[in-house]
Length: 102
Image (cartoon, rainbow, N blue to C red; front, side, top):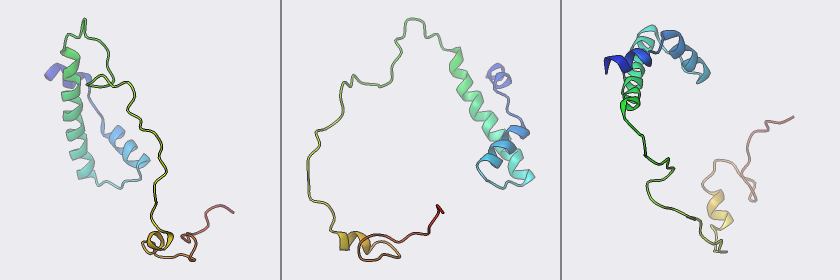
């Protein structure tokens, strides 16, 4: 585990950068804690590199799934009035939302 943690070391600067990209405001204490926690998590993930996967087939699912899609069927939908009563503002035909494109 110690070797794996050396490989996956994460820096405070990386945590601060990811927080900035996610628009999160972290205190210096939170950055410190998150750095330690993420470093620990990445250490566990790096532990997987120690597994011998020779001869193990690459998979995307745990089961053989050929086609999980269903046929499209026309079914009754929610009445407009019932749907509109769940929104804060509507004009009896659609939800009214703030304009975002000029």
